[in-house]
Structure formats: C-alpha cells, structure tokens
Length: 119
Image (cartoon, rainbow, N blue to C red; front, side, top):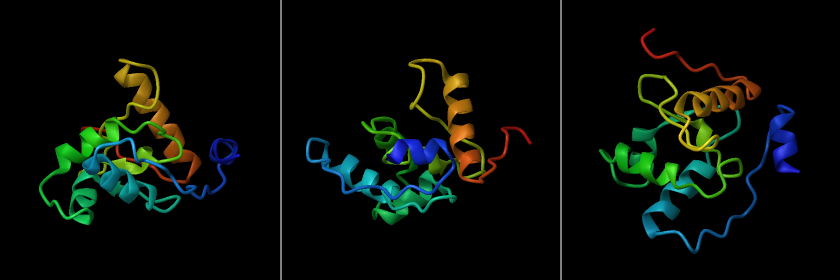
C-alpha cells in the first residue's frame, strides 16, 4: 500500500519499523531518515547533526546506503549539502546513473526538484 501511494505521488506515512537487526548507528540514522516529511529533503550533514554526530555526513551516507527497505525508509529524501542528489542505491545494482534517475523520479513524485551537479 505504501509503495503504491509513493509511486502514485501521494504522501506516504512510514510504518513502525523493526530495525533491530541493523547496527546501532544505522538504526539511529534510518530512524532520522524515516522522520523526513513527504515532499522535503535533508542533507547528509543535517541527518548527522540530528543524530548527534555533526561532521559525520559520510558515515550517514554509508548507513543510508545500507538501508534494507529504501522505499519505506525514504533515503531518496537525503541529498547533498549543495542541493544535488548525492548518491542512491535503491535501484539497479552498480548502475549509478540509473539509480540517480530513480532518486530524481521519486523526488519529483513528491514535488521536489533537486539541482543537477555543476549547475
């Protein structure tokens, strides 16, 4: 139901998640990511600040990249500090360009336009 709503461009409320099998750092980061409201984005650095580890933006990126349920924990809403997409692993394994297009599409369905790198 949540995935259908997301793909239809309707707001999705993240259900209660059991992330007990994840490392403590990943759980903290993924819970912060799950709290990002529909139609908004937050930088990796801001997530680091929210979990009490300012300066750990790259570590946040690692935790986001290990997200086991990327549509329910909306890691597509986490972007680079300069407003560009950053990275995204929620698509084709190893195909960075295709994955970024998936991330861009998911954000556009929420009414968000990210900057293109170099612009």
